[in-house]
Image (cartoon, rainbow, N blue to C red; front, top):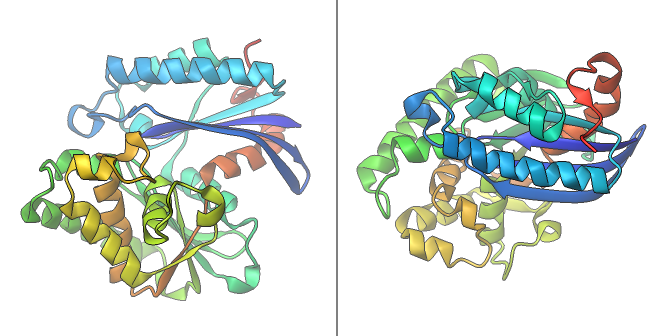
Length: 317
């Protein structure tokens, strides 16, 4: 089955077109647009008209791409920002009109399960249990398991949310960083009550904040997913890259050759989440994965299409 997986997060909306046949997945195309759907949601509780319009334009392009590539079924998943928004019904209506499918505003637990599946399918179970750390724009999921999820918690410490709450200076002031760190510590205290993190043998880091930190640690001349995928970044390098990013101005971060323009203003917070997790959990290193929730969504389409036809549908032609 040729599937279209759409992940609509707080910062970006992404598309994966893939051919899925049983236990085999062949990627055809990946795209990402930074639309900042969750801009201001932490403060206002609503998706702004501007953010909805940015997302609408991206989804219109994705609908055209899916039609051009003869995608048979699409599943669209929306996460933290949409969960938090009072006007999510307006978002749902827009998606139905533009993409031709019913968007699924999933829970933190569902988000964690999809992220875990996407990240660990290609890993050796002998290296488990895995602790998957998925740092998004609005939330971060920490998930423990080997071949299936054993424990998970989604906490509201995403890079967009923490930037808007605390990291307003250019560069952020020490007090702002300390306030963001306090939020992360409070969230990790909740995680420890639910997820036995000490059981993990391998920590797997996901999403753009993590892969950007890895690209900087590897000193890549340009963003290279093949070099980043399954790289191992020692704790000391995670800390050093984070300190460097938090000390830089927006202009300096924008000049970094691996930096996506849509990540410039939130990468400091994303790196801080990763660095604090590594430090507080006493981790030696992070295994970085380019496979994440988007891959989990793609893997799920054939099964979900048979049971939830309202969520997984044929794209607009």
